Length: 118
Picture 1 (cartoon, rainbow, N blue to C red):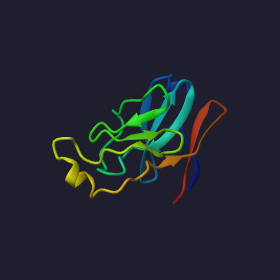
Picture 2 (picture 1 turned 135 degrees about the vertical axis):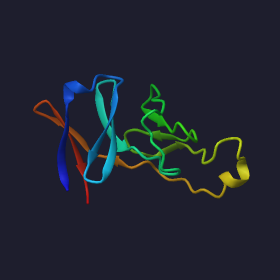
Picture 3 (picture 1 turned 45 degrees about the vertical axis):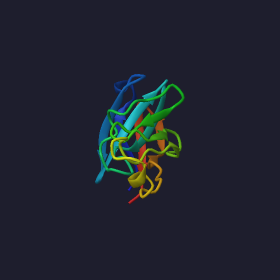
Picture 4 (picture 1 turned 180 degrees about the vertical axis):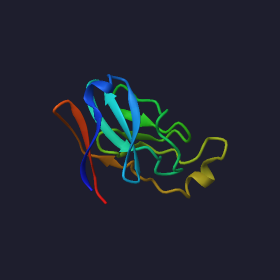
């Protein structure tokens, strides 16, 4: 699919986030301290929306459903909590750690571009 223009860069102020669709992919755009990031809007474990996840000052996003923490830049798992605490550790050990998918972002001529592979 390649690079796709998804949004005007001034439409996403620092601290804002917005979900855009590129092909069949729902992508969460985040402006964290003036830097744009694009991640899969689906948690890699439960496939639930990441949009309402807390963004930490050091550039991570927390899944609002099971509280795993992912690096916005790389998608790497910072803290894996595969199940809500009420389910317990036994089931948590069954679920494998999975990184959050990230997409390359560039800003050009006042627009945010995201690269998505088919």
